[in-house]
Length: 213
Image (cartoon, rainbow, N blue to C red):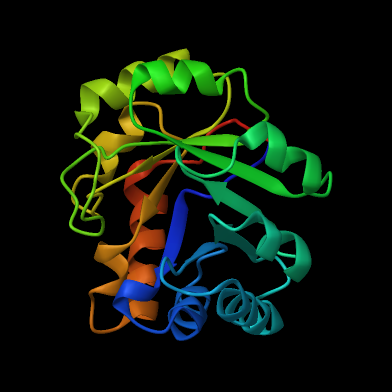
């Protein structure tokens, strides 16, 4: 199984230029960054991902939201798919063997179905109410997250309304990593907030999960 850092940072275009945001996230110490630009054309997203890859640290990984074609052509570390995107089984066939495939789930039933799919990790949420998606699925809460984590045979990334204040509870449910958008990007200093997150994860949340590549 793949190894995931505690912090899964998302450079969401809803908060600004994702290239600039990704640079600030990496400067703050993030090492797994998803590029998310729902309104971009394939060409625009490709150019943004390539720009980020040029300055990403050697141990940094870039995940592309939704677009497997962009992930493949740019040489990004992988792609993250939602429930309404092309099926993971189909996408796995076009990705290279070492590229990561992540898949969103919003209920225990979806998570159990994902167990039969070629996904390297599953995202579970929204754990808490979130303002980053206007069409967000119903909140699963900590109990729902705990139930999914207890049944999953692969790493679970928790997402949705996660802040530094509630992250410890999220990790206690069995999540390997937390995907964070607003709590990083809404700060006046993204790099500094990222540093605070990583320090908090190390001092308060404990060591990373035992899932390894």
